[in-house]
Amino acid sequence: MASLTQILRLPNSSFSRTLALKFYPTITNQDWFACSIFYSTILSSTCSFRAFGSFAGESEDGMVDHQEFQKWSNGGGLCHNLACIDPTAVVKFGAVIHERATLGANVHVGSGSVVGPCVRVGQSTSLGFNVALSNCFIGDSCVFHNGVCIGQDGFGFFIDEHGNMAKKPQALYVRIGNLVEIGANTCVDRGSWRDTTVGDYTKIDNLVQIGHNVIIGKSCLLCGQVGIAGSATIGDYVTFGGRVAVCDHVSIVSKINGCIECSEQSWRVQKGRTLNLHLPFQFFNRFALQQTVVSRRTSRSLETTVAFLRFQFSNGEGK
Image (tube, rainbow, N blue to C red):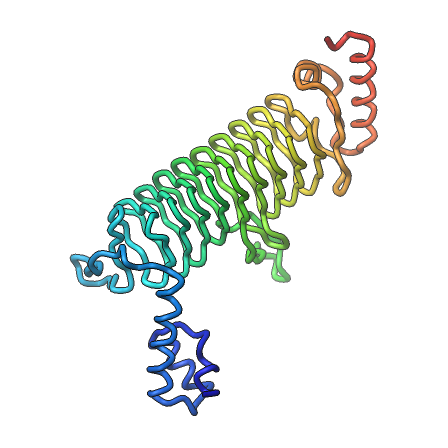
C-alpha cells in the first residue's frame, strides 16, 4: 500500500488531506480513511487522552472556535487534541497546552500558563502562574516560578542594504536540563546560531535575562538582575551575585565567583578569550570594585589587574 505510506507522517486534518492530494493524486478516500485510523491508533497508543473532559465550546461572540481543544479533567485547563499528556499531569484552569506539546508524568501547570507547540516538559516539573514556554525542551524535576518566559526570540537586528533596521532570524531552541529552578519573571531567549542551554542543577533568581545562544553549565547560581548577553559561554559551578553583567561572546571558565554589581567594565575580555580567575569569593567581592577598573579596550589591563590582586592576596592583604 505504497500510497498510504506516503502520507503516514501527515496530521489527520483537512489541510493535510488537501496537501496530500495535491502532491499524491493517487491517494483514494479509502487510503485516507485507513491512514486516519492508523494515525489515531498510533497517537492513542503513545499518548493517553482518557483524562479529557468535554470539548471546549465557542466563545460568547461566536468568533473563535476551540473545537480542537478539550478540557483536561485533572485541573480543568485546555489541551489540544494532538498534545501528548501523561494522565498524572495537572493542567490548572486557565492554562493552555498547544498541539504536539508533551507533558511528562506528574507535571504541574499553573493557571494562566501557556505551553506552546512542540514543547517538551519532563516529568515532575512544576510551572507556576503565567509561565510561557515556546521553542524549548525542559528536563525533569524543574521548577519555574510565576511569569517565567522561555523560548521567545532573542534581540538580534542588523542594518539592511536600504539602511533600515532588520531582524535577524531566531529559529533555534532553548534546552533546560534537569533539576533547574528559575525565579519569577526571568527570561531565556531562543538561539539563532546555536541552542540556548542551561545545565543540570542550575539555580536562577528572579528578574534574570539570558540572551540568545548563551550556554550555562551545571550547578551555576545566578542571583537577581543578572544579565548575560548573547553568545556568552559560562562554565560549571559559576556564581554571579546580584546585577552582575556579562558581555556578549565572552567565555567564563568553571568555578568563578562574581561580585555584586560587577559590570562589564570589570568583566569584559576580548571576544573569544577566556576569563580565568581563581580567587575566593570574599576576596574578589571586596577588592574587585576598589582597585583599578579593567579597561574595555584591551585584555592586557585585565591580566595586570588579576596579577595585582593575586599579589595582594599572596601577601595577606586580601584577607
